[in-house]
Length: 240
Image 1: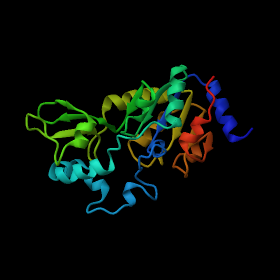
Image 2 (image 1 turned 120 degrees about the horizontal axis):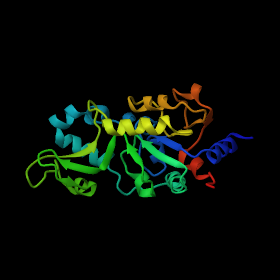
Image 3 (image 1 turned 120 degrees about the vertical axis):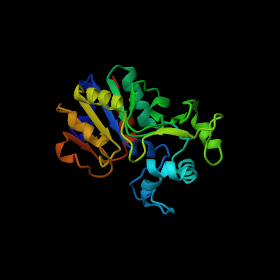
Image 4 (image 1 turned 135 degrees about the vertical axis):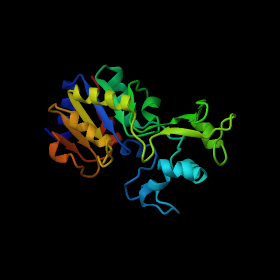
C-alpha cells in the first residue's frame, strides 16, 4: 500500500479528525507565507517583518505598520483552494471535528468549515481600541494611513502580534480537540512558531499524519509523512 492509500485508509477509519494547519495551507490560494524562499521574511524592507508586526512597533509606528499590513498581509481576493474545500466536506460528513489554524485569512470559513480555531486571530475582525466598534477588513484596506474610528480611536486588526499572548479560550478549545482526536493531520506548517506548534504534543493517538513540502521538527513522531502540496494532497481524498 502506498503512502497516500495509507492516508486514505486512516481517514476512512477515523471519526474525530482534527486538522492543524499553517501558512502552506494558504499559499496555494496565492497568499505568501513567511519562511519559504519567497516568503515575507526573505524580502527586503526598511524594518524586518517580525519587527513591523510586533505590538511595540504597532503602537510606536502605526502608519508604517498599516502600510506593511495592507501591502503584505491583507489579501482579500484570495479564494479557498481544493484543500480547504475538502476539509469543509469532511466536516459536513461529520468526520472532521475541528480545524486549528495559524492562518489569519479566514479561508477555512469561506470554504464552509464551522468549527475553526484561529490561534493567531483574523484579518476579518477589527476593533477600535477606544470604543470597541467593529470594522471589516475591507474598511482597513480602503482606509488611508492609520485607520481611525469616528470616535477618534485607532482601529486594530484582531491578529496576534509578536509580544502578544494567544487567546486562552482558543488555546483551551484547541487542546481539547487535539487531545481527543483519533486522527491528527498536520499540514502546511514548519512547526517552528511557538506556542502554537507545541499544541500537537497533546495528541496521544496513533494516527499522526504530517503533510509538508519540507521536513518538520515532528517528523520523527509521525505515523505517516506525505511530501507535497497540502491542498493538492487533501483534494485527492475521497470522503465516504
